[in-house]
Amino acid sequence: MLLRAFTVLLAFVVTAQPLPADADADTLIAQAIAAEQALQSETALALFLQAEKARPDDPLLLQKIARQYSDSIVDLESKSEQRRYAEQALAYSQRAIDLDPDDPVNVLSRAVSRGKLALFSNTRTKIEYSRLIKTDAERAIALDPDYAWAHHVLGRWHREVATLGTVAQWYVGLVYGGLPEASVTAAVSQLERAVELEPDNLNHHLELGLAYQAAGRNDDARRALEYGLGLPSREKHDDVAKSRARRALADIG
Image 1 (cartoon, helix red, strand yellow):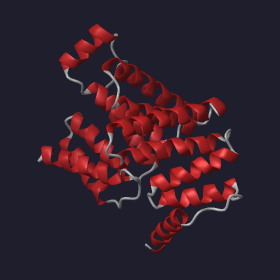
Image 2 (tube, one colour):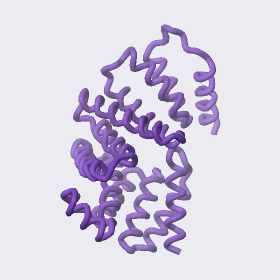
Image 3 (cartoon, helix red, strand yellow):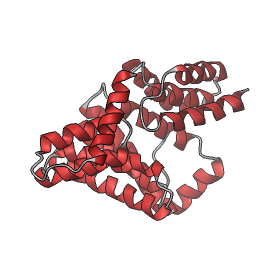
Image 4 (tube, rainbow, N blue to C red):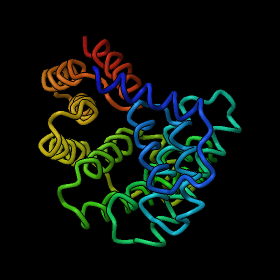
């Protein structure tokens, strides 16, 4: 609690006081990380962007910027601004990959960015992005088999595609050439691996619960969802994930 209060205070101080013109990139990045930990995405983004001026070819920094653009979308009300931030997230994640194509975090960052931008895209683009998300998640796992979030993203992809209605699958296949094969079994397997790798991350438990629900394993779904809901929220989107989990629990009954 004391650490959280300190990081919130630091983020406020960084926002309220102008930085010296000669502040170096390391200082800016340290301040940005403190703001990020305090869930102050806009502050973190502004600081990372300042640091980029000194380090335009730093792939780690570019990936950090991509994440802040992505995380900030939930704070915006304008659909046009949300789309612009999603486009920026994808652009920065692509730049990070161009500089370091074998970093699994960069690869998965592009997958997540495409998922965000797909929400503002037409059906054809959504389908194309869905194919590419699967490809990037699988590549991230190939680069680092113990990357929990890559297993999470691939598991969620399998669940969402496998649970498309029959009519929707037929239409996608007829008009857009279909999607790669997906299964609820694969979703469960990938998400169980994510939980095994990061048992303290509530998102993995909640997404696993949704996969169990899709597989008709309601008792397992209830246990996973309740366990995840009992873990403390730490990340930007944890409360959103918990709201979705509560709705799933209500559906299970």
